[in-house]
Each structure stands twice: as C-alpha cells, then as structure tokens.
Amino acid sequence: MRYSARRRCSGKLHLSALFVLTFASLAYAQNADGSTQNVQLSIGLPLHIRVTRTAHLRRGTAVEGLLTEPVYVSDRLVLPKGSLVSGVVSDLAAADRKIRTQALLNGDITPLHDPIVNFNRVRNQQIDITLESTASIRAAQFVRFTKTPRKSSLFQQVKTVTRDRVQSIHEQIFAPGKKDRGLKLFYSQLPYHPQRIWAGTEFIANLTDAVVVTLPAQPPAKIAEISSGLRDLDVTARLASTLSSDVAKKGDPITAIVIQPIFNQQHELILPEGTQLEGTVSQSKPSRSFGRNGQLRFAFQSVHRLGEDAKKTHGTLTGAEGNTSQNITVDDEGGVKSNPDKNRFVAPLLLGVLAIAGHDRDSDGSGLGRQTVASNGFGLVARVVALTANSRNVATGFGAYAFAKSIYFRFLTRGHPVSFPKDTLVEVQLSTR
Image (cartoon, rainbow, N blue to C red; front, side, top):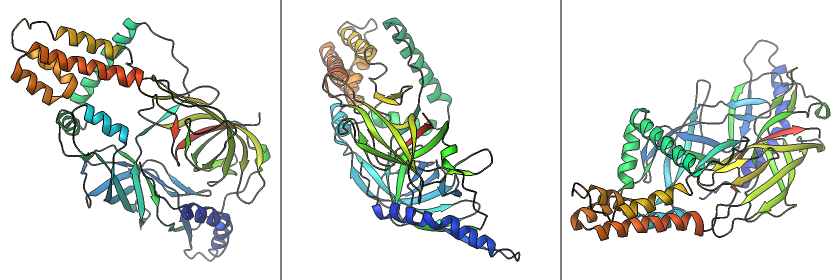
C-alpha cells in the first residue's frame, strides 16, 4: 500500500499544540461579557475511516464513510467518532505483489488495484469542514492481549473448523449485507470480474495540509503533575514510523504519539494529545522460509509532554492494530507474534481427501462430486471444464492442484512478518515499574 502523507502536517500539529491551551485561555477570558467567542484549533492527524456504502473502483467515484476514531487537539475533542466523511477516488494503485500472485494461482486474471481516495469533507452536528487528503486501504483488526489457548487435537480442530463454517454460512444467510456477500462470492468464482470498494473497508487518510476547525471557547484543563499520575494508565497512541520484525533490530528506537488525552479523577490533564512515548525494540525475529512467522517485542521507557522534560516510566503493549493476514497475538509481556492460519493442518487434509474422492466414480453419475473437487482449484472455470470433460482425471488434477497450492502457501513459502505501518494504533499500559 502507498502512503503519501507529508511530514509537515505532523510538524504543524505539534507546533500548534504548544499554544492551544494558552490561546484557549485568552479566548475564554475575553468571553466574560457574555458575548460568543470561538477558538481555532489546527488538526493534522490521520483520520481512520470505515466505508458505509459499496462503491465502484474507478476514478471519480464518490465514497462515503464514518470516522472510527475520535480526533483530539491537546485536551479538546475536535472530531467525534461517527462523524460523516465523504470523498472521491482520486487514483488507483497496483495491488500488493503477493496478493496478485495468489489471485493468478487461483485463476483470477483481473488486474487488481487498490483505491487512493481523497476524503475532502467531514461533517457532524457541530461542524462542516473541507479538507484534502490521501487515503489508502488499511486491512487491519485490533488485537488485545488474551491468554494463549491450549493446543487442541486434530479431531477438535476439525470440529472447530466445521462449527466456524456452519456459523459463517448462517451469518451469510441472515446477517445484514447479504447482497454484498453474495456478489463477493460470485466474483470470487470468476476469472475476470469488476472491482468494488466494499462497505466495511477501512482507510487511513493522511491530510495534505493541516485543517483549522472553529469551536466555541472553553476553559483549558488544569495540568496534573506527571510524576504522580503515571500509574496503571491505559494509553491509546499511534506509531510515528513503520515497524517490522523483518527490519527492526534490538535496541532500535521507537516513538508513539498519544491520540486521546488522559485525565485523572479530579479531571486534571495528565497526558494531552501529542504527548510522545519513547522506547526501544527489545526483541525482533524475522519471518523465514517454510512458513516460519516473525516475532516482535518492544517497550516504552519515557513519556515526553510537549514543552517539558521526558519522564521515566514503563510502558507495555497491551493491544495493537494488525494486518488481518498476519493473524497476530499479543502476550502478557507485550510481545507480538504472527501466527499460522487457524486451519493450517485441517485445510490441506480435507483438500487431499477431496482429491482422492474425486477419482472415484460418482454413485449417481451426475458429475457433481467432480465439479466440487475441481472448484477447489479454479472456481467457476474448473466447474465448467469438469462438467464439459466429465472426466475423473480432470477433476482429480484440479483437486491435486488445490492440495499442492494449500501445502505451498501454508508450509513452504515465507511466513508472515509482524509489520506495523506508520500511524498504526496501539494500546500501552504505563506504570511506575
């Protein structure tokens, strides 16, 4: 994916944040006569957006969505979660090489592309502003620390896969969005198909220039002493740069920027938006061949509020936004690991059984079994070929191909790295330890 945000946006944000509290205080003081007084706040943070309506993948197409994360400036909420966002597809970028290769091996010759969207308007009940941005798809899900489950037997794995499959079918039939799911399934069986920006797709929009938002003035929050407040704080932040287990080395510095202010029980401001968490990589294990996945561990050692000296602390990762294909987990010490597919062993086993079964004669002579086996290789194309040829050897050939492909991608190819692009959301627990 391509991210073309300009660094000067972040710089403008930090410079403006230094004067926000002072400026807001003066504005509020001038409001003593009862007249309406406003304050202008400058934002340059990337926006997290989820598309709400499926759109065609072509330049000029209108795209609509909602903010999935609120936007703050210092202690002030500027853009609440759920604000409406709209824009247009400004450009198309070639899909990732690995995704394109897998599509070709599945018989999909469509020239796959990812959209570059210019989200240019944000509105809610309080504001309606225009902006310029460059947004790319971020296929990620947020993963929090959970206890590692015990290893299950092969029978239990088959049972789990079957149960999940049944549940998935039930959701496809009864859950909202049946039209989109049906269209996705149909397209997945075609060798060449139209492309869509599906509802639910998530983007990160980097602002081309900082945006000024005018809001009613309010008194600034009282600043708390940071030395007495850094105890069992859960902080939401974004990584200031890309971090990957394939590149990072032990001792490499990392920085995360707080995106949501933290207050104490007296509603005193402990950590304003823009506070920096500074730390280092403590362990990095790259992905390797034969499906061996990467591992990454890092921690934060200091907190740096704007305009103040850094304070020592201990920050442990408790959650992170990870690429869905990496299947990451977070352990109790903040280590991040990319895991194999949940059906790593079961899927090849089932495909192998189907390939063998496809060579047997169908009891009803209809060829339905051969079509089913063949469809595991090339979708609708394989179904048509198997139906036309009506040959056990053809069906078995497609089934064996699907089995070999499953083995290759699960056991022989390079594993998944633990990769966090710039602006990835993380949750960090701070303590005095």
